[in-house]
Amino acid sequence: MKRKKFSRATLLFGLMLVFLLSSCSFVRIQNVAVSTATVSVRVPDSGKTYVRTIRSGAIVDVFSSHGGSYTITMIESEEYINFLKDLRSEIERKLFSEGKTLTAEEVVRLTENLKQIDSSLEQTRLPGATCSGYVPDFDTVVVVISFDDFNANWSLSCSSGSSN
Amino acid sequence: MALGAGGYYAFSNGMINQREILNTIGMGTGEISIINIADEVLDTKLLRMDTESGSPETINNENIAPFDISGYGGIQPGIYELHITTPSGVPAGGVCRMTITSGDSLQFVAVPSGIAVSKEGMQAQSADDLDMSTSGLCR
Image (tube, rainbow over all chains, first blue to last red; front, side, top):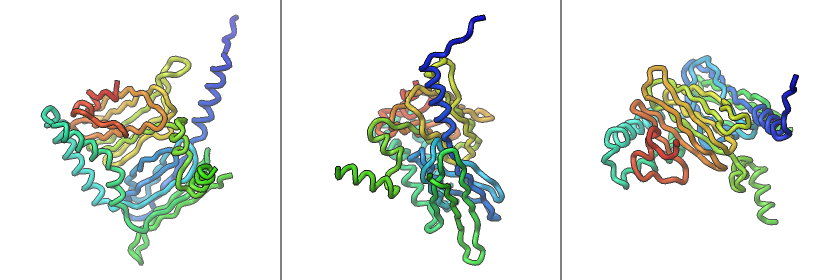
């Protein structure tokens, strides 16, 4: 019987793949408040902001391909939804209805609006309701969202793993 | 030397991260951001096409709820396909085949009529460039 031979390159590639896939980290967000929360999440492997809407009692995992610093911020839900609805109307109308007749200037403006989504999201953040932490490679950290009824404030608690 | 010390200070204080440093020297990764402004959950899957075995390899799957923003970070340079589908077929979704290089940042925005795609540092010339079904970014 002929044995299958693996080249050194295949072995190296396999090991690298295993390393890359297994160095993944998770930020686990748990909403213990009685109402739905919308949060923006910055994970170590992305320069972009992710947004998750989390129902009361729900837990959501956000993946990062490696460890590092992360930040979670509460978002003013209504303002955020309205911003996205406005953007949807603009894309629907300009790109998919009037696309054939768009001028170069309108294309530039639409592209710019798409690129500014991240900075526009900044404006929907709730001041003060934010926390940061460190998620190590191969690890999961937990963030708890709660609502302080007495002060009528959202509260975020970020855990950190050891960087060593 | 001053540059090195400044870089170390910025890194140790969290002003820059590992991803930004590697992108600066051309040894970084790419990222894909997906914004779901359609009315349905988007099922997305990222496949690497240029594998040693020649068979596509699934990198990750993401189900993205309406009005959520998600994506894939830390993507090693290579050839990939992003598959986007919805249970009802609205938006129609589709496949975007793209070559990712260090520092690339692509953005997909799904609305009920279709999916818009753009890339940081690249200016669209026409509406076709922004529509995933016709864009040159997805070839």
